Image (cartoon, rainbow, N blue to C red; front, side, top):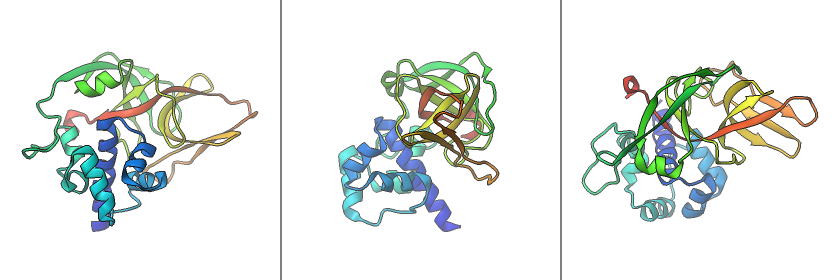
Length: 230
C-alpha cells in the first residue's frame, strides 16, 4: 500500500512537471539522461522512486526544483493546481496571473459516446494558456482514464498539437463518437488504451482497411480538478 502511495506521488509530480514546462516525455528523458520508457513508467506509476541521485540532480537543477517537488504530496502537482502553500523559493503558480479558456463539452473516458456540449470557462495559469492559445476544456465522464485524469476533472485539449505515440488524446471514432484514451500508433494500426482502476475497460484497436476512421480532436496537455476535488 505504501508503494502505491509513492507511485502516485511521483506519477502526479512528473506529469505536473511536463505540464508546467510544456515538454514531451522524450524531452524530459533527454534532460534526465534516461530512456523515454523510463518517463512513461514514472507517469504510469510503475516505478515508485528514482534511485539514481544523478537523475534526480539532472531534473531538479535543470528546472530549478527541489526533490520535494518530485516526491512529496506537497510537490509540483499540488503547487500547479493550487492545493498547497508553496515554501519560499519554490516554483508555485499560486499568486500567478490567471486566464480563462472555454469549456466546450464533455468527453467520455470509457465507451465511445457522442459529446455533450457545454458553455462556460475554466480558470488556469496564464502561462499555460499562452502556450496553448487555441486550446479548450472538456469535462471528463467515466473512469476509463482515472489513473491519470479523475472523473469530473477538466482536461485541456490542444487541437494544434499532433499526438505522438503514447500521447493521451480526445479522438472521434467514425466521425461521431468521442473518447479519450492513450494512443499507441503502429505502421498499420492504432490502439486506444485505457489507464483505469476498473479492469472491465479494454483496448480499442483500429486496423488500416477495417472501415473505421479515427480523427484527432486534440492532444491533452493539462488538466484542472473541479473545486470539490481540491
